[in-house]
Length: 215
Length: 259
Image (cartoon, rainbow over all chains, first blue to last red; front, top):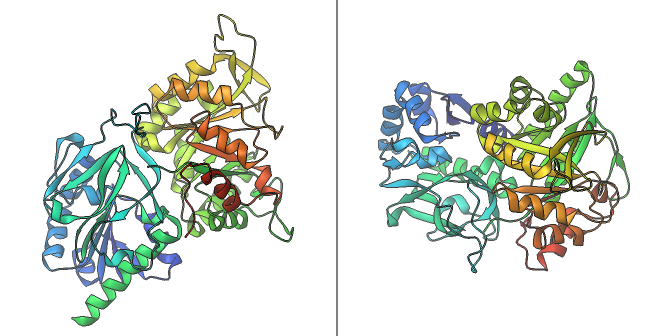
């Protein structure tokens, strides 16, 4: 059983639909006991980082999340959920969860798509892009390295170097997958990234199952 | 670098496709959910559903279709047709669509763009524009006029002005349909597409006139479109989405292939 963290800035339903299609049992919940009982937690997020943090703090879910992470509960942050695991986000000047050192920055619209420097990047970064892995990561097992994932965001994570797992190029390289084993964060939306995205969610569920069985 | 997107468009009336989609072996499929799955598996980057239902009863059936699609395909899809108010937007987004497209509704009430962007985020709001070539004039200096009601009614709006207004109001993307090119299979109106691409910073989807994969390649390489909308050339089994992408990728355009 996976828990999908319920709070108002989440896109829980689309994550749930993806898990359902994979036959992975799941529950959308904000109940601390239910979260603790789950094999792993998915932490989605849409909208602005400031609003997402306000929602979390308002519901007391920031400390719930942190204690789950201290107890080494496997966790997957998605999009804004990925960004606010860091210390800080430039979006709304937001103090974030400080689970992983680093910050989240706005794409610079002066960056260019082409080498000639003539086509400025469009912000948000919206559409399909590749992910280059810098470290081995269980989440990407069985996924062809040429696969692309669906992104929609204006701010990008910039964690401390040792936490950068994968990077994507948009004007420049930015970190699109970060974290450490069992605490992962992806900037793209696996639930909207076709087969490779579903594979990533299945890999996360398999990892959670193994960790849970080993305990 | 972002891949250029190929987006099949499905027209739906009372919950059924208005024209069937032919699978390999020429079996005609009238079910929008089945067809969406078919394109999803072939590697469509997004799917657009255009609801041409007039009745409110048909609208309810359509929302059921949107929910079914959301539980079976795991790529973004957008919904357009008959979206006039914030409540119309909310209904399709809640049913599971990623984006919602406003067209005539936004011409009549431009505020719906800013209301939608504020409530759901700019990335959710697509401004659909139907455009017709007219003689250049003081009122329409670009020679491209926005039309509504399927191209039957001129609005007096210059397409360049309207695109910029839509962007300023918070639209995250423009779906630009040439009424002159639509149905001709002679290619997108590249001049129109280039003109709008140069006038705004948000992505532009070229629409109307695709007859072969080269037309799509040109929308990307010659006009700077971010995505290309297609209908009949895939619906009748003439081309597959994967075949189209291979053709375009061979010209050095980044395409997402299904691995």
